[in-house]
Length: 187
Image 1 (tube, helix red, strand yellow):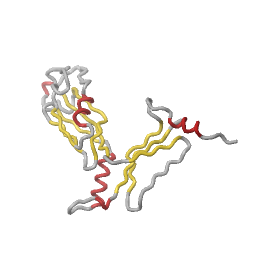
Image 2: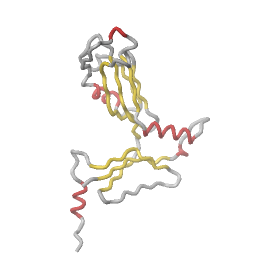
Image 3: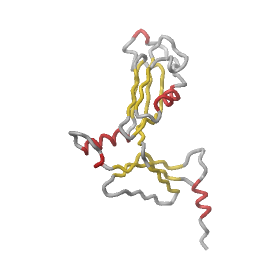
Image 4: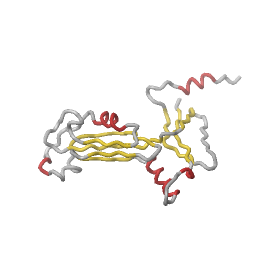
């Protein structure tokens, strides 16, 4: 049996305080920052900065530190190599998770010393991070297959769906089948 899980926020546009700005535009900008995926990159020697708006934290989706022929090579053309080599640091994701996960903002210096042994000395590398801004206050509701899931909020609030998943996690017990077993048979 499958299950639908929805993560949502209840937001109140009137609670937003911004001086000299249009509240509706500010609110839409805030929502956009929460709901979209963000990508940031920096070349060796630069700082990578990740930032999320108030009431949200960084949720790292992926990270890559390695060689690229387009993003950073224009700065140092002599480091451009003709043959592609596997120059990917396997510690990239864990390092970015350790430094940035669940923080509102973070900054990382990009260089090979941060990400372990340099697999390609003498080549320019870069760090590419994909992240979302996860709300700090949210609610989760689930419904099993063939069940109805109703979400509602007060008139002055907005219901914002942050994520929805249909199915179940590999490590999760089959919660829905246990619920079906508890239903008394019709006689």
